[in-house]
Length: 283
Image (cartoon, rainbow, N blue to C red; front, side, top):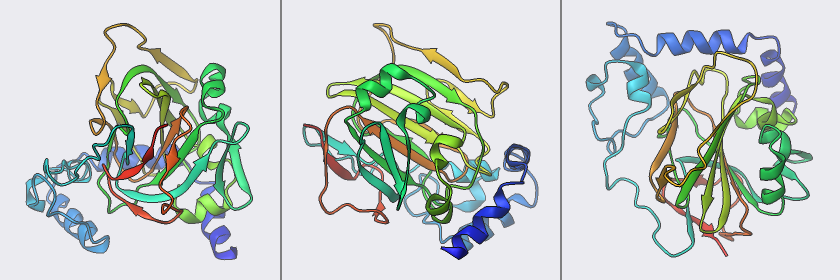
């Protein structure tokens, strides 16, 4: 635990957004240093390229293009059963379970407010209050596009400004209210099984969060919570497994379901998961 605190405390005084904006700029530059940087990163983090549409590292003109690379169509089979929930991303389970009295489990002896996570959306918080959640951490080596756990129609997108602390395991274990403190994008969908919210949590060096319907959401121009409503008859509908967004560096996605879903009994914190994998059933 002391080691976790020693890693976390130096993050407090850092200019999170300034560092992340610099990363935003650097990862979009084309130069003779780009390919060596990509090769070094791929070697250090043991990045799997065989499942990418373009496995040749020399193909990528910028670091960001490499980091947000697409996968081949057969690389991640999507679970197909009625009511089955597909994993939205490659990564590891940080926490999974029930939303209990408006609180979400973060780590041992730590939880945080559902209402705060949603940017103060009382109506959504009331619907999700007795539902289920799954928190998935994407490491630097992972595939960084995000996909739909179940099919749904887009209702709204909310940008909630905040800090950009690391969301690595050591920070999750030590920094209370981490996911409700960091900058995040909340996408709400109406599904056959009730409300679903996908919370895309920013972190230091996560220089941008994108959604497929909006494009670049962060970095934002303002510091106030902003919401866009899409609740019309012709609002975007996405099927289970469809891409819904992406991180431009590693971070965390939180799945919130109004439905009292039953998670896989063999799924626990720390387990590695892949996009499209069966996570549980809506009831």
